[in-house]
Image (cartoon, rainbow, N blue to C red):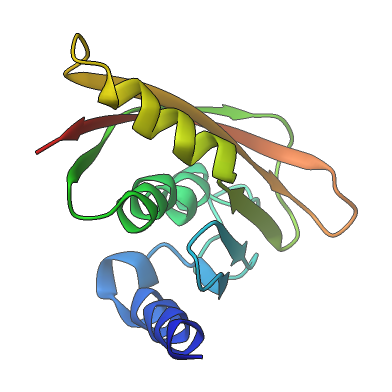
Length: 152
């Protein structure tokens, strides 16, 4: 119960935090265990570019911090997590509200921990992909994130 309340507070915190609020994106859901996050990016005067489609910078910024945050929350305080690299591929101009769903499986979390438990491994890079889709599931952009993880 408390974790669900806490995740709702984080969702509100993201949506009111000025740096994230400026993207035009809104966090609509954070799972209590931080293994799923959903974001929506409305097509509005705030996110529209010169030619009337969703600004690419808004698309990227709306999805930027989430895999890093999910790993920070699921791995715990014994790990250091940083965004290292990102790549965005625009597939189709956005003219509607776009949605992104981020997921981390138990297997992925266990794999990160296992890889870092190896004495020969100081740090690892993990690659994650998220798609921005419309109501019909059409992909408008694909973002690939590289996240750096190490132990303290």
